[in-house]
Amino acid sequence: MLRDACPDSWGQAVLQREHKLPAGTPPVRYLMLAGNDQRWGALAVGTSKTPSVTSLSKPRLAQLDALSRELRAMAEGRPAIVGTLRRRLVHTPSLGGARPKTTVRDDEGRSWLVKPRLGSDTADVPRLEHATRLWGTACGLSFAQTVLHSGDEFSAVRVLRFDRDGERRLMCVSAATLLQTEYPGGGPGEMSRWSYPRLAEELQRIGAPPEDRVELFGRMVFNAVCGNDDDHVRNHAVVYRAQEGRWRLAPAYDAVPNTAEMPAQLAMQLSAGRFDISRESVLADSARFGFANRDKAEHHLNELLTRIEVAFDTEETVLDPDWKGALRARAVAVLRKLRIRPA
Ligand SMILES: Nc1ncnc2c1ncn2[C@@H]1O[C@H](COP(=O)(O)OP(=O)(O)OP(=O)(O)O)[C@@H](O)[C@H]1O
Ligand SMILES: [Mg+2]
Image 1 (cartoon, rainbow, N blue to C red):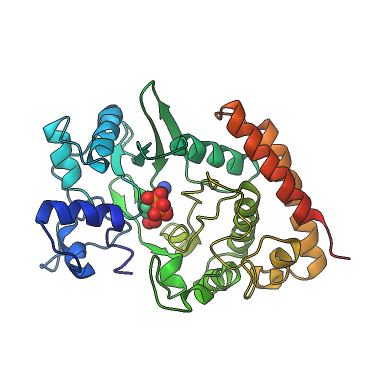
Image 2 (image 1 turned 90 degrees about the vertical axis):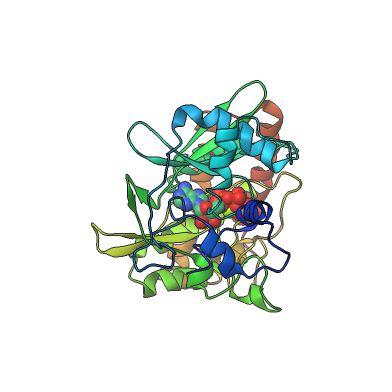
């Protein structure tokens, strides 16, 4: 859980530059240096019993464009465009993930994660992330809300933070922690712990309701159809809902189709020992997601595939025709594969 609260490669790179840290600096140093305000979940880290969680200044939604440009300049090693924004970004590197990001506050006090397009991106990744969210939501899955910002020279997606409720910081745990595994990195055999059905069992063990396991099953199938093979164990999480008094599967986030190729595998096992995208691997462990029997799981899968297919065309598109065509062709091929019953 401390690892969940620690910056990943992006935040660590920012801290390394700012504090001139040598290679091999232990993670605990990054944990201590990253501020608590933007830190993921509810943990606060510090040397006193009640570490401060307040920020000096809170970036506003109106600054999103300027912040995105500044993040991009930082990622490309260019000098500051606006010194004050650069200083703010340098001092708030605590969020996880590989891509540059920051948090802005809207007029209602809600926090949004901002992820801009980078110069090194061969595709408009923010647009793809937003389009995937629209598609996923249209087929009935629960996603963190997104808003696309696009101008002539840049695009960025903002994602509603599920670990905040106004000023309140909500407890969160990643799937990496629930599965007691590491990502990125880890030793040989680490991948044997990356598993959807195991995660489903963990959801049950921590008291999440049965529908969360069915939702997880749906996300696994959706990731297969849309080609999101970056569905690793830090891209799933649970959040504690105090009103309900229990842990719940957090909304889906960071779902982006692979921009280079149509993946044949997912990052987590769909059933024991199987990463491959096929009807059999989707269904083999369906009991662990709570389906009473194979017939019920097959019925659910068939309906889900129809919903995913219909949603692709009904959802208001934000993709350009090339991408829309490519994703449709990909979806058609995977849907066919997932519908065929083995002889
Ligand atoms: N909507 C959200 N609400 C709260 N926390 C989030 C949300 N989206 C992402 N996070 C947290 O921030 C981390 C980084 O975000 P995200 O996965 O979107 O970034 P990324 O840089 O694209 O990641 P990756 O390294 O997987 O490519 C996540 O691992 C998760 O802990
Ligand atoms: Mg991620």
